Image (cartoon, rainbow, N blue to C red; front, side, top):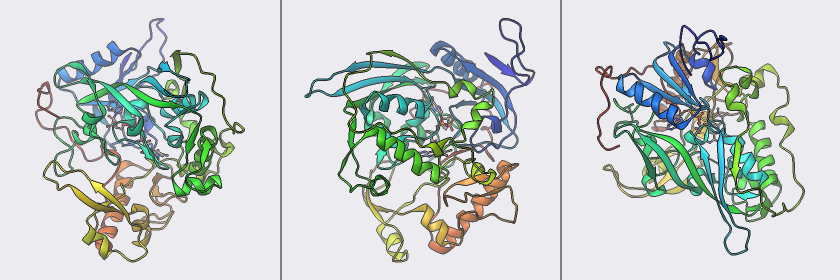
Length: 448
Ligand SMILES: Cc1cc2nc3c(=O)[nH]c(=O)nc-3n(C[C@H](O)[C@H](O)[C@H](O)COP(=O)(O)OP(=O)(O)OC[C@H]3O[C@@H](n4cnc5c(N)ncnc54)[C@H](O)[C@@H]3O)c2cc1C
């Protein structure tokens, strides 16, 4: 189904929705103007066809998932927004003997991420439970290598099937080709130039559009808790083995308390309703392994009615800035109590391989004078979440320019105080213009 701003009729001749959506309709931050064309596709061929047609016509393409890592542009999107409505999950293998416990599960890119996690946990498959409650889709999960509470999706990805827009072929990417890193992958890196600015060809959607992801999980309903904050919330010490259902419910509670769950009411919006549906499962039936310990239900607070203020704390992109990875010298200049975590950094692209220090963007923001709830003026429509320093939120009626003005003030404040440049985590459409001459040009076949 492709729609433009004139609306569309389905095969029965019924007008479904009167106009194409706005970026605000499609994103968790709820900012951004009208979309010129919208294609909601239900098969792999339709998905590839929609992208191919737009690329052939030289139109900008935005493949959108949950819109939870996107800052829309106030002027809208003068191109084609493609939404993958497929929601198939195929359990390829499940072994229950005690030596081989790997389960392979292939999920279509359009599957809602948290619905996938819920399904895996319910079947007793370990590997993604700490990523419970992250909004968005399976397809986008590998673009920025989502992570939380000590887990990253890259640890369980064994294969990514993608449409290569440069060569017009379907390819299979192995984890090594994905070049996963902290909140990044080859797909995301290919969208930006060396200087971190949006590239002229593969922005705002990567050259490789994810069609499906195959995960290798463990057929074992317990996991080792090795992240301090999660262990604390569970009331155990790190290193303890816990029921994955209990880990999931605890992660959901912790996230709810920080406003780091998406607002479930957004699925009342007809443009998003299909994404809210459960996956369609095929393949190996659920196994016989039993959960250890009581099955704990998802935190009630995840869906309970919230005050208006707390509801708006969920109108965000999650963490707006990436935790900076800085040199040892820069870390040494930070105040004594600044968080420091040693990390190793990969070489390549002119960067030296070696050790570095990850610090906390939330700590830097807070200590640069921007506490929770900070806004540029009383009653301003964009503000820091009242629950989490890293979330820039829409308090209702914010435009993208309001959010980006707040981001700019925070970036300057942190740079002035600590000499560290904060880099936004979401894909920012506000201020971006398609490269001149894009129209009518099919992207050529250069390497990502
Ligand atoms: C409340 C909240 C909490 C969050 N918490 C976390 C967290 O704990 N950890 C974390 O890592 N992230 C977190 N996020 C960020 C976000 O949920 C993730 O980045 C998520 O993976 C984005 O998925 P999406 O489908 O919404 O992507 P979108 O926002 O729809 O798209 C983001 C980018 O991915 C591209 N993309 C989408 N689908 C595909 C595809 N099939 N193939 C290729 N490219 C594609 C888009 O073109 C775009 O460039 C949070 C966000 C919110 C709102």
